Amino acid sequence: MPGYCRVSRDGVEIFVRLTPKSSRNAIEGAEEAGDGKVHIKARVRAVPEDGKANAALEKLIAEWLKVPKADVEVVSGATSRLKGVAIRGDSKALLSKIVLAGETFTGK
Image 1 (cartoon, rainbow, N blue to C red):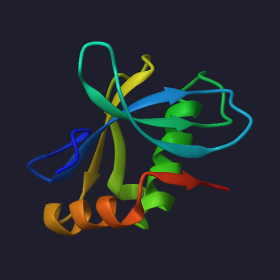
Image 2: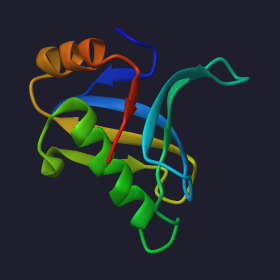
Image 3: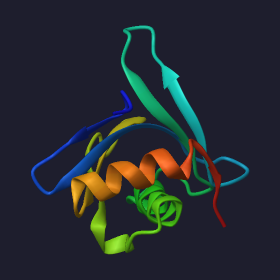
Image 4: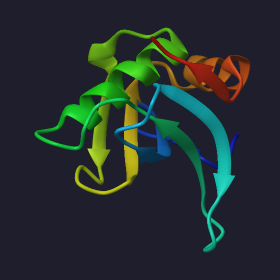
């Protein structure tokens, strides 16, 4: 299992470092922070106001994993760059999608 995700009660949770106000929406792969924790680097065009960047991140992850947007939710770090994102569904199937999707994805 990749270090940036864990199985949760309802599916999988992934750990993301988000950069808002970017020139593009993208998943840029895994990165290890100075404290040894691993997260997915993501960029969105949206500004970090009124939850717009979080909503854009949820949409990007849904597109990346080809799951309904309603199944993706920022569950921690709403006002931080480091976020926990829950993806509801069968954890084994979701982990397979994460591994098969690769770590780089450019959204719309």
